[in-house]
Amino acid sequence: RGLLAALRDEDAEAGVRAGVAHHLGWVEANRARARFLMRRREAEVVAVSKGDVAVLNKRFFAALAEWHAPLAADGAIRDLEIPLLCAIWWGPAQEYARGVLESGRSPRSLLADAEPALADAAWAALAPPRLRSSR
Image 1: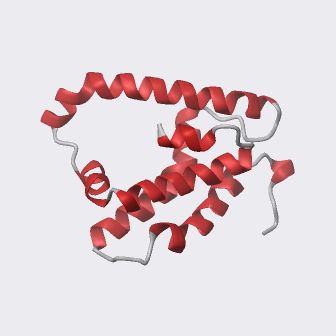
Image 2: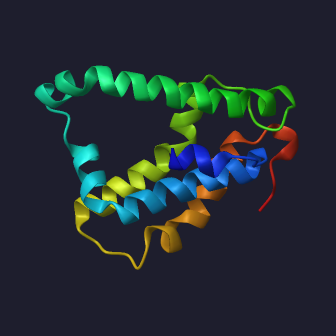
């Protein structure tokens, strides 16, 4: 819900940047939960929560597609399948967060340390060729 709220009424670039910021902010505010989600995938936990997670994922990906489709149709963002869009968008931020959580490092803030670079990278990867900046 928080991520989808961050995308409301945002243009493509602002939305991509807001998505990265939200993800890192959530990890920063929920380190124990994030660590659990990134490490724990025991078969018993997955089996018990499979139905609930599938329903939540279906809703999330449908809402994300509603945000993405008109922007992609207008050429404001690359037109990618949602799983690929998500991997490119949040993959680097998730890897950074995983590394921080596993190392025990305590940067002053995931947002302050990494968000600008990760948001720039996400937008550089998702911007259509005509909008890619030379920053």
